[in-house]
Length: 184
Length: 215
Image (cartoon, one colour):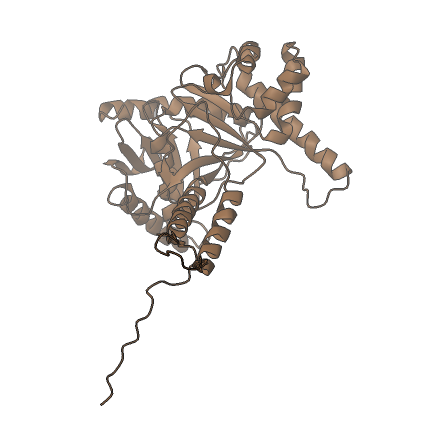
């Protein structure tokens, strides 16, 4: 769009007058390009920063002489099975206070149960006069679980905020239970 | 009666200022952008709602995908880590090879194939499927050595910097991040976590993507 002056040609015998050319250059295209590049760099820089989830595992070597007693009704165990399915129960494995229940991931699945259990454990702790305590969750992933499942459950922990959670090793009895319910 | 004259104004506006600003911003973004390094193992990380950012530097990353494990060491301790590995496995490296190793983003080969890997060009090196991963089984646990030596090298590096009187340097253990593929089976991840726990490295990061709570 920059105007070009092709002066001369029509002037016969006239004085050759140098035409004043317009000093402004059309910047539209340049600005277009600049903004396009800005958009590109803005989007790529902010999106490439990875998120992270800090994870603390218990110390392996120290065998606690006096294991901290956990009240059974505040202990929840989550078993991660195959095909994105979960089995959870409250209390001890031999005598659960809430029998093993199947659940799925997401806000309509395990989160509802978790929120309910967190509330229940809080109430139970209040009754015992220990208001700082709450639900203790033990996460046990079977060999059929995927990494995504583990992250999903850890994510639920971050959302529902129980007092304590840990990743534990699955026992043979629990694998049997998963097999029986068709989740292993 | 005088006619109301509509003065014809030029539709053009002066774009000089806009152009200036646009290019200023452009140069800013170009300078702050970090080019994406080619990775030998691109993985699809699972998403989470946790908003913590991964520390930008001083993080060693263990990438896990398709049952193979890759390791990325922070640039400043790459050389010293390799020196320790070289001593442990009795594989001498030349000065040139140390340089190449420093420029390598991540790698996933057993120690005895490292020399071969360094001879290749960047393109060939990061070709998918060429690097088979660092051995991490209990018989030949090289990953454990890499992590151990990287932590030692990081400690030494920090000590050195503190002794040199550098300020704002705090003594801390090397941060380790696990970057796993979403579809990776749990036993592989469990094994990697196990290796870390055996070295009393109980705190680490899991690299994730981002999502909202309504999944």
